[in-house]
Amino acid sequence: MCGIIGYAGHRPAIPLLLEGLHHLEYRGYDSAGVAYPLGGKIQVVKSAGKLSLLENKIAGYPAQLATAGIGHTRWATHGLPVECNAHPHLSQNGRIAIVHNGIIENFQEIKDELAARGHVFASETDTEVLAHLIEEDKAQCSSWLEAFASALKRAHGAYAVAMIAADEPDVIYAARMSAPLLLGTGTGECFVASDIPAFLSYTRDVVFLEDGEIARLQKSRWEVFSLNDLKKLSKKVDHIAWDMQAAAKDGYRHFMLKEIMEQPRVITDCLSGRLVREGGAWKVRLPELDALPEPSHLHIVACGTSYNAGLWSRNLLENIGGIPVDLDIASEFRYRAPLLRKGEAVLVISQSGETADTLAALRLAKEKECPVIGLCNVVGSSIARESDVVLYTQAGPEISVASTKAMCSQMVMLTLLSLYFAQRAGRSDGELADALSSLPEQLSSILPGLKNRAEQLAVKYSASRNFFYLGRGQCYALALEGALKLKELSYIHAEGYASGEMKHGPIALIDAQFPTFALALDNELFYKVQSNIQEILARNGRVIALVQANGEKLADLGVEDLWQLPQAHPVISGFLALPALQLFSYATADYLGKDVDQPRNLAKSVTVE
Ligand code: G6P
Image (cartoon, rainbow, N blue to C red):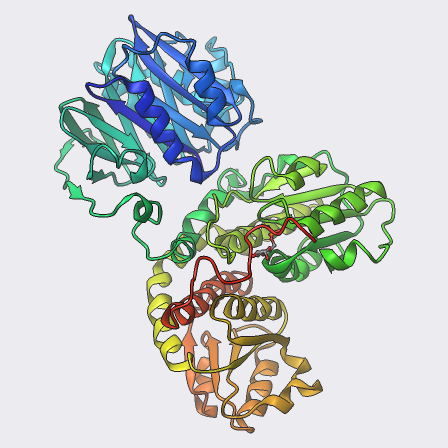
């Protein structure tokens, strides 16, 4: 998502900042900017759009003498992706500048207070509010470090921030709370960045900041303090042995694995500023949709994994959101002359925002004057631009061809959408909102165990030539996704089926060589799935069952491999099952020596029909 770079050293800062920003481009952005102290003032240069536009603009500024500065690539959250909302943001008197990644959840409250005291804001961002607050706090503090800490203590939410001040032109301040930020410590120069590749060409010595830590950097000195009491902390310097390409993979063997493992962070980013507590209750904020009349019917249209995410959400949108839903594969929808009535809306789901069939479906809906909501990951993509309203999934760039974290982010957004429609109708589901807010933590805690179990099962089942994936209800969509992932990556033939359909054909194929991956999670359909598993066992079929507490019941039946997930809210259980399916396919393909990130014959973005 947003990318931060800061430099204090002996070289011209601007080229280094721009180079760092290029290395952070993979995070996705829609505007960029830099700020540097020069001649007793702070100079800010920023631009909407790509870095090349910023580079062209900087060429006209006297920047060569600056040896410190901060830079930022922004992925819009508060306010449009326009120049005035791009970072860095200045304080009221223009004597400090900050860049920020994350969301200050209580920014409106602070903004109102500051406005009442005469502050005037140049942007719609939460970040600018923080800059103003730091400047105001400085009046009561003896140093910028104290003022920085004092303002941050008032900020709620997730953030990584870097700051420069005009009267300390060789110093960078930085702080981290639930958003990535680390220091690079070179000889006569220090860096701060959202990710290692931003400075890896200059130093491999890295200090990882923890939540609640604040740093002060100069060219030959760096210090880290605790945000709470400004006590100096002793920090370890790690030496990075990876090269640039491996660094982009964050140390993982493949992008796919990295993307699976970063799903907790993706969920946090997706929820940030959208699921908020107000007056003791959960509120869903999707301001993009506020002006859209509530649709009487929603037609979901998508391809591949995005279609599976749509299918997964149907029950939620209907039962929680109260909106009738039908679903189409985009290549079918575009040619079947769909009946779209007044008051209805089309929801297109696409990670890339460029899938040809989905785009054609969108255009068809618009031709029929049906409003289109786009659910996209890539900012500024065709689908994002052509939709009447766009909701960004904010998963960050997905590089592996097989989609993983994008589906997770789509599922989060679709859950939020269901809660949002419920809220508009005066209903709420506090239990689901609670469970959703603690999902990132819960998922983080189980991912390493899921990876180990996936590796064991992959070795055991990798010789299979065929696989069934079975599930009911929302788990039917996950069964389709599990089968899709396995065939995409490992080239093992796999079919996803609604468990209840087994008897209508597929059961004829079951024998000891044809294993089944059953999603038997704890929900009202568990006993139905259990019966289907019994039927498979009765035909000597081998079964892997993804289970929760009810798993014991399947152990008694003789299921060969139980894969245990913790108990969770039934909707949230899907988010725990998804990485298990992804990791099983990943581990199988990796064990078989397949090209995991770029499977044969497949493309990340299918821009032709
Ligand atoms: C391709 C990709 C899939 C993706 C599908 C839809 O087939 O390989 O991973 O699910 O396109 O892509 P979209 O970008 O529209 O979500």
